[in-house]
Amino acid sequence: MANCQLSGNLRHIAGFLLAPTVPIMVGHSWGFAMRPQFLLTDPGHFNVSYCINPWMAPEAWNAGAARAARAGSGALCAAIREAGGEVHLLPAVEGLPDLVFPANAAVVLDGTVLAARFLHPQRQGEEAIFRAAFEDLRARGLVDEIVELPDGVIQEGAGDAIWDQTRGHFWIGHGQRSTASSIAVIEQVFDQPGVALELASPRFYHLDTCFCPLAGGRLLYYPPAFTPAALAAIHAQVQPADRIVASDEDAAAFSVNAVNIGEVIIMARPPENLRARLAAHGYRVVPIDLDPFILSGGGAYCMTLRLDRAGGAGRMRRVG
Ligand code: ARG
Image (cartoon, rainbow, N blue to C red):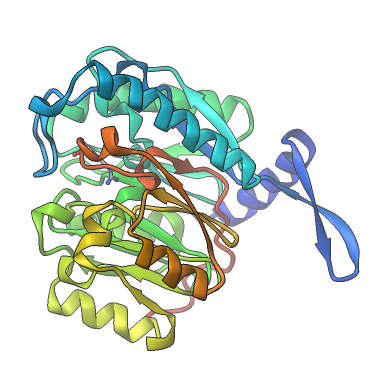
């Protein structure tokens, strides 16, 4: 939207006054910054009862998994708060188990919410619930406006459109869930450039399962999930020293699907080797047992939706 930058700035001024802030060091003096804002969903009605991706295992679901899901979701909330984030919790809805993955509900930047449209009928009932949640967030001053996708465009939210804070553009996944037609829509709605990344494998059906930009410009990613053209696009933007390559084991542990706040990376329990490699780059991994959510094909990132990302200067620039 043409005025999204202005409204985003106004929202940040409002956010500064309304939302809890954290003291930060700015040069040699103290200032205040808005806490990172996250939407999560209560896992009370989460289960695995259908199969819309190759990880989903309804036969493995039981009461123990339901208990572990509550514990895992609670631990994720606690880790986000511990890292300085603020959590807004959406109530669970019976019959919509994948509501626990709000990353798929929308793309959010500069206060603008582009509401998602799901490919699979099993998840389409979530659209109205999330729409109402965004209206509520708007009434509370946490977002400014809610935008609808054009007819026929499938777009599964921040799972397939990841804002790169360092480079100032979206990375846009398509080819599995979201349609290629979503790329131009995202660029136009947010007035920001996007780099299209076609996904090559049904196992890595959302971009966030195989791609995680990190604070400071590094990238954790799983190369086999991408087409050759997508890999070339990644390598054109991210220099070799900034690439952290996930192994088959890292990707299968859903560790790439991570929440990054500053030097903290919250992720489903990673192999020790990945943890050590990230530590060598200065990141501190907070591992969480998210096994019940992996039974649905999801990890830490897709259990959250970041609400406060700000884009900066718009698309006068071109990427690539
Ligand atoms: N069962 C969900 C689905 O297949 C999992 C979604 C996980 N979300 C994500 N952004 N990776 O849609």
